[in-house]
Length: 92
Length: 149
Image (tube, rainbow over all chains, first blue to last red; front, side, top):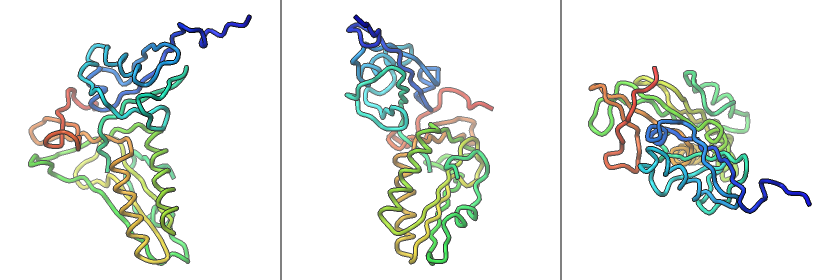
């Protein structure tokens, strides 16, 4: 029987999260990696980052991108996904 | 043409990119760095962007404008450190007539400000710095660190 580790029930995926502007200041990093269970969602990643030192000051509801697309908190995350937490935008 | 640039923005190349013999109306918009914000004197500012998504979002906005109106649109936004009077954003929209050119130009700047992941950090005459945040009371949130030199 073939066992694909990523598909195992208890597999844990590392998810890279890019942080910008004030959010990067709060965490003291422009990039963090958190581990979520297979089948996890963006909400799980947000919880993971908010549990890091400084992370509790992040808003509970943030704009989140997966790759170059905004996604909702119920969006499933996959191995190798790169998420980004986006503060309120102020370009222009 | 990439939408984000760390070099000074020139309007003429954007106009040239959208001109054609069939388009007789060209509307342009420049956003330049203002010397005040919410009663404070701004001396310089910096723009940080999530580059890949900002490029993609600008392309999507241009495509939307070009599908809603019979126009061609070019847009560029500056990143990095800027001083008072520098051009932060430039848009050129060209159509057969002025109506669609003005409307498309307006659409692009409004959507850019709402959707493109770019963040403005201001430095004031008293040396303090803040992130501009349209959702925050007073429109800014104090910065926690000094900007990288």
